[in-house]
Image 1 (cartoon, rainbow, N blue to C red):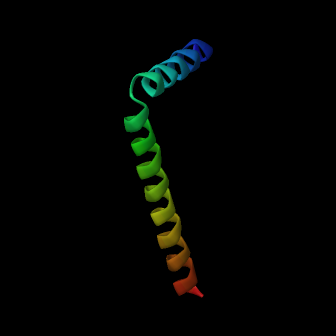
Image 2: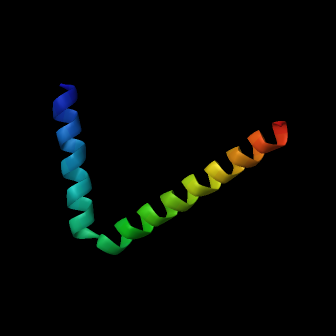
Amino acid sequence: MRKVIAWLALAFVVFYVIQAPESSADLVRSTGHALGDAASRLATFFASLG
């Protein structure tokens, strides 16, 4: 069952990328920025501990 759900999720992602490539790129870009900001804030936190 888990394998079927994983394949369905992958199919949905591929379909979304094909149907709306600009929106997909924006989503990936904003996710990357959010992860980068979170990593920077964590680094600042750990640097302030020492």
